[in-house]
Amino acid sequence: MKRFLSVFLAIVFMVSFVGCDDIGSEYDVKDYLAPDKTFEFEGLEITLTEAFRVDEQSDESVWYESYGETSVAIDVFDFIGTDVSLDEFVSAIIKEYTHTGGFENISEVKAEDDFLYFDYDCEMFGFEFKYMEAFYMSNGCLWTVYFMCDIEDYDILHEYFIKWAKSVVIP
Image (cartoon, rainbow, N blue to C red; front, side, top):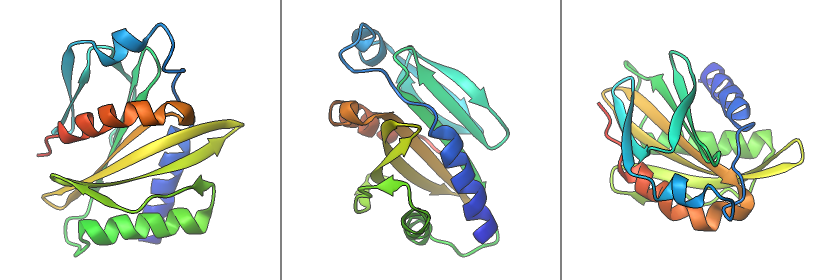
């Protein structure tokens, strides 16, 4: 479990380099009012908008970025043969984030439909980002979907993050 959390945190720090422009930019309408588009990764489907594109992809994760640079990352972890519940995993992640440091204002875990989520702030190289991290479990796999943007834009974008998180269909 420690090795898994170390790998997981390394991925989070890599993803942390991605942020978003100010919501007041010319990209507003294009990014958030664009027609819906469904993306698929390893069986998981998420409906974002046509403004998103695949930025990077590996066997275990994919990053989507809009032209306004709001970002969504998806990771999948195989837990087949273990007895870890979604609640236990999310609690372990929060504990690790708290222990590691660098993650500020970690919220309480909230439940929405078929997923759990929490949000937090993270400063990287002088830039402040806000994340909403959503967790799903299906068939022994844990799916983590990160929604991230500039901290100043989070209050406006949170409703989109929830909408997109609710659109997730897991295999």
